[in-house]
Image 1 (tube, rainbow, N blue to C red):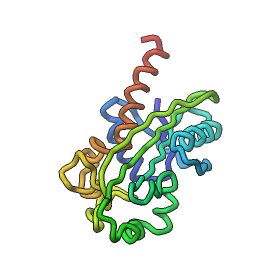
Image 2: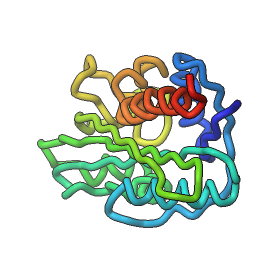
Image 3: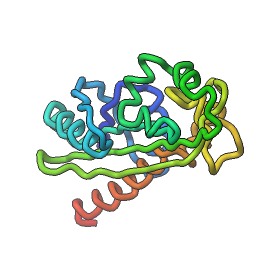
Image 4: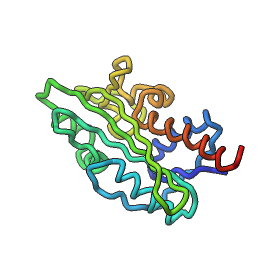
Length: 192
């Protein structure tokens, strides 16, 4: 039985599908248009989003929401990352960062899963890093060309393969936690 990932972002779907293979999971992408609330806490955004998605889809599903938190900008754009990316993009962030020597940032991710109309389950991931001084790489999507993870080798996410990025990223960490839980949860529910 397929597990539904509700997202309109084909890049996210591609990355998460690669991770699903490791767990023997088959993902289906659903692009149902749920309303993404604006909230300071990504966990709340994921909870409300997956409840809406479940109500429309009527089957177990998950959603993912991420935010880029730049320390010298007081955590901006944070949970408003999608809007900021769509309005000023990577170039706008680099312009805002010009003149800043401290370029520390972190990516955070919340994954919400729902299989009944009750309280959804949320999983979180985080990766520390810094903002580059220029766009680098052609892979990935969103802010990937300007984010250099601390645990990496100095490349941006956009300079990495999907597998390399998944091993280090906020999304990779949250999805791994979710998939591990989901496999155990599914086994327990089937009585294995």
